Structures are given as C-alpha cells and as structure tokens.
Length: 128
Image 1 (cartoon, rainbow, N blue to C red):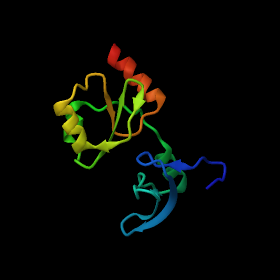
Image 2: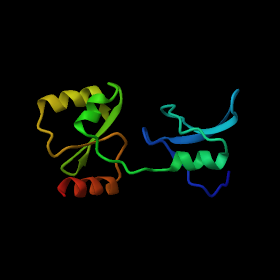
Image 3: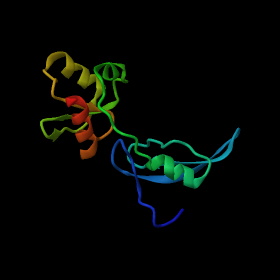
Image 4: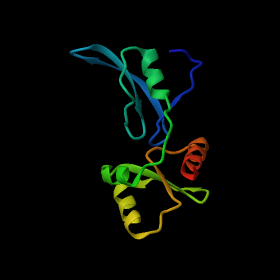
C-alpha cells in the first residue's frame, strides 16, 4: 500500500481503521479494513487496492425516513441534526421514543455522521 494514501476513518465511531488480510477457504486471500475502536469491518475485497477503495468510498449520506428508523436494529446508532446542532449518536430504540413523544418535524436523522455537505443536500432536498 502506498504511504501517500489518507488513513481510513471508521464511519461509525471515527477511529482509524487498519488493513487486515485473511484467508477464505472458498475464495482464497482477501483484504479488508477493521476499526480499532468499534471493530467494524469494511467491505471485503480480493486485492489491497480494491479494499482501500471500498473502505474509503463515501456514498451520499441521506436522511433516514421514519420507516427506516423503525426498521433499524434497536442498537443501531442514529445521528440527529436540528437547528444547526449535530447531536451525538443515540440508539435507534431511543430515537423511536423521540419520534413517538416529541415534535421532530425539523429534525433530520442519519445512519452515519453527516458532513456539512450531506446536511446541505438533505436540506435542499427537503425544501423542494
């Protein structure tokens, strides 16, 4: 791996992920990145370059719909953004409670920590 590459940052907890190599009895050698903080694993690939690309790919982070929140596992982390404040992630179970008892009309919920660009894109999408 080239030393010029940026470190791979975990999308769930923000810790640095490290490259790991494994062996699969059916497909042979594989590569992935593993978070040292929360032990999450990036998508598995069959070359080091492909593993890096898969771990650093950042698809658009769109707000979750109410249905998606209710379909989440109760321990999934959900980020809430409201009135210029990004709150620390809370469990989906706690989010279910908020949805049932509070006015959340202006709150956007995300599965991963949203960037300012994600928030702005979601705001524009919501306002159209």
